[in-house]
Amino acid sequence: MAPVVVVGAGPTGLTAAALLARHGVDCLVLERRTRPHPQPRAVHLDDEAYAILASVGVDLGAISRPGQGLRLLDAGMRVLAEFRRDAAAGRHGYPEANMFDQPDLERILRRKVTVLDGAEVTEIIQHGDHVRVNGERADYVLGCDGANSFVRNAIGARMRDLGFAQRWLVVDIDTDADLGQWEGVHQVCDTRRAATYMRVGKSRYRWEFRLRDGETAADYQDLSRLRPLIAPWARVEDLELRRVAEYTFRAQIADKWRHDRVFLLGDAAHLTPPFIGQGLGAGLRDAANLAWKLAAVRDGELPASVLDTYQAERLPHVRTMIRLAKLLGAAMTEGGEFGNLLRRVVMPRLHLVPGLKNRVLSSETPALRRSELVRRPRFRRSLAGSLCPGLMPDRMTVVTAETHPELADWLRHGHARAALIRPDGVVLEATPSGPPR
Image (cartoon, rainbow, N blue to C red; front, side, top):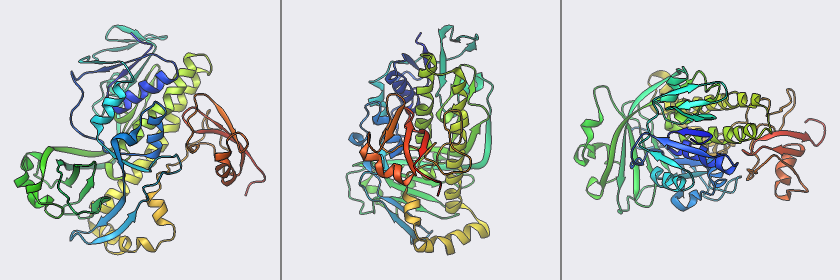
């Protein structure tokens, strides 16, 4: 068996394998299904995730369309707030929001790695200097096997609930008809029937509706039953139903992401409500964070202790993004005085807040916290822990205004003379340019 075994051939597992291959580590991806999952699931990635895919030769732009922004609507479909996004490239050189079809992405990633379909993992046993997977030896195992992870159970990890669980109906539609709708994401903020509408591709659209008590996906298995829900946006006569499914949106984080030589990534480690479109992106960030560290440890370039930085760096970042998702979910669905205040008073005035549009639309996620591989000073602002714009080098790289003129403004705004960039694009350490400001 290969030195690293990846369990699960979703986008997170495939990307982890491709990143490890980029760093010279052979991988085998084991997938319990006998064929790739044919149905769409994730539909959005930001430019940080786009950059991760680009580093392994995936052109997300070939299978995606730029997102146009966000519109918040009340129960009567009146606009509460609207944030239009410029489709131009962001700080990493790619659109900041990208709508895509997950099966398309998986097909591209599968061409870059070795996948064994129909290979269900039923046993993982650790032996100090190696791991046995179904009896076969490997150096490391990456559990990328989703919300119902076998690997998570095998290492004794447990999901910790962060206080969010809602049942939603997901409807995927194909049509060549012009729906005449604004092509950003529509979020209907309604305690009785919160909803989301978005155009995903040239002819594919997605609706999501919060299910009421007693309702299930079985109540909406054909377009005639979906008509009352979809009518504000389209005539069902123009539509072809591709999929109807029920999901429970949860906010959860595993209590441990590693046990010796076994790691958890993606939905196996954390579940993010979909309201800010960061579920899959979090998994790709896990892969980027861990892959280069594993490669460096295997090659003897870094001590094994750096593997402890994986959870130390990623968990706080994930928790922050989950909290943001829960906040938007509350704005859409919360009842009582808090929810009513958000919808009636706060949202219609959001456009009056200086700089809020940029904050709402910004794809820039928080910097990583201090660790052995993020040397942030305690009492001074620093670029350490943040992502370097447009750069994911093959190895540790020092950037200055002289070596990388395109980053001169970024260094200057970060009050840095030089920055040491990790292979995942994160700033390990920055040399200050002058006295702290």
